[in-house]
Length: 129
Image 1 (cartoon, rainbow, N blue to C red):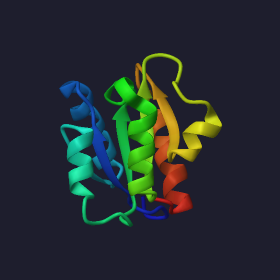
Image 2: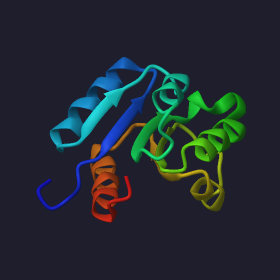
Image 3: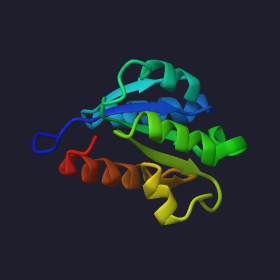
């Protein structure tokens, strides 16, 4: 991690074993990891700071009920947040639509740690989060 920027990463995942695995893996790469129980908790964390840059890794199912309106709301209030969305199926957003909402990429279950690492390296080198 000496040539890349350390990222602040928020994990919002229902399954504890996935959360623990990703937390340990991402921390071992040198990034700062904060685990939150819900999207609402994320919004509360950023309530008074819309300019804070960070990456959020979250399950798509947490957005499912009203995904478009939820992600639009988050992106409008916190345009500096980027998302990596974990999905079991085909993503609910087109690439163009996802980018407009701050979604940087998707991870498909089962999650490939190598794929996650590549995403984080790309983000670190771009210094966007």
